[in-house]
Length: 101
Image 1: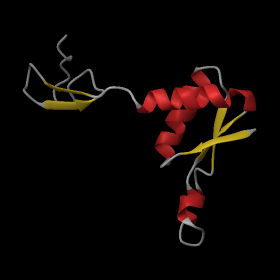
Image 2: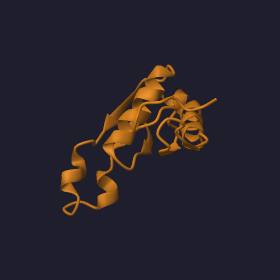
Image 3: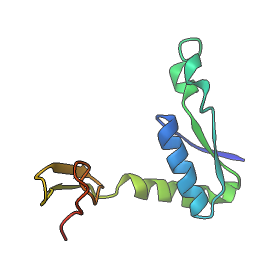
Image 4: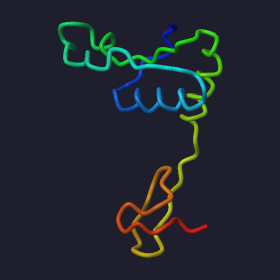
């Protein structure tokens, strides 16, 4: 087992772990419930961690997480309801219309 990174929260830790597993790099989340100990322990020691099952996957895993963090973000107005939609969404959160091509 090899520690890869600390995640800022449990949601991102699970997302990153699932992404790595789908890419063929078995990973798990550790310390996901330690956040309640923050204060008794230093807060940075209570963040969830991503651990790889195989150390030889470390370089590829870091590259994949870097690629995930640099995905382009879009900003568009929904043609159906006029709502401003930001981020990586391809569907309007308000009415469900698809992003124009």
